[in-house]
Length: 98
Image (cartoon, rainbow, N blue to C red; front, side, top):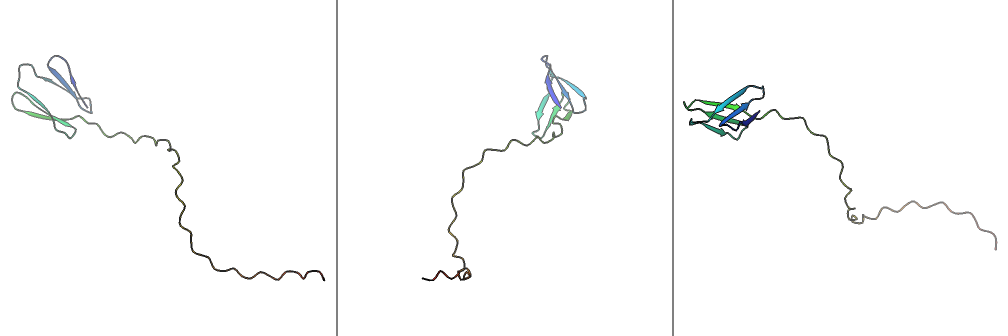
């Protein structure tokens, strides 16, 4: 919805359904208050109030942005504990006679 200043002392409020309310502030005591919650309240010269929603429904989520650059490499971690000893290997072949 939107509020348009017509430039002649009148304002046009159009709600989300296209309904228009024209408010004439010429020579009358009126107020237009932003309620801070997506609505405005108009009070006319007879102290009659009308509250109009001026915020439409939330739009769809936007597309994901591009991935950022890769960050720097982290520091090396601490040295781990010594592992257990491995099994003994098989004996080698007998060498030549000397």
